[in-house]
Length: 171
Ligand SMILES: Cc1cc2nc3c(=O)[nH]c(=O)nc-3n(C[C@H](O)[C@H](O)[C@H](O)COP(=O)(O)O)c2cc1C
Image 1 (cartoon, rainbow, N blue to C red):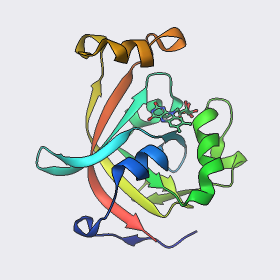
Image 2: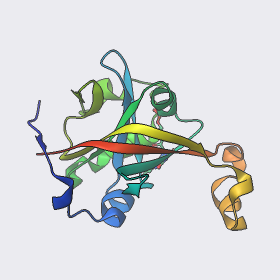
Image 3: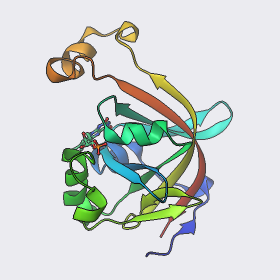
């Protein structure tokens, strides 16, 4: 088990485009009995409703969505580049098929009952503030539907979860 320290948000030098879009993260949710995680490369950190927030986008089909919906919290764990293969695995295999934390080298750790990934080097823990289903009627650019919600994903829309950042941990 690695030692994490609380990290003050005002000292953060975090480039969301590289850290989220290129390096990716694992979203985890659940409890100490059962949890699941999946890779994400969409999302952001910012300020909303007077709070520091993280926002993530999770498709209807993801097993992780069930855990987020049944929990009041979720976390985002960021990694050193050497874990890229684990991130690929967490982004291809569903927890419905196999317990990804049993079959990979990644392990769950907990902060006040919220799961995160122990091998990460930076963790953002969130309390859910809103779950916003993204619907076709909201798209102003027709390319969005064509590019992201066609074929097998015709009805597999994302829900945006906005979470108040309760803790940031680093090691
Ligand atoms: C690089 C990468 C980024 C991904 N980003 C997202 C994302 O932001 N939102 C999402 O719903 N799925 C995303 N996925 C797909 C899920 O990680 C994938 O479907 C995963 O197997 C879901 O696991 P689960 O069913 O155990 O939740 C991404 C996959 C990869 C490889």
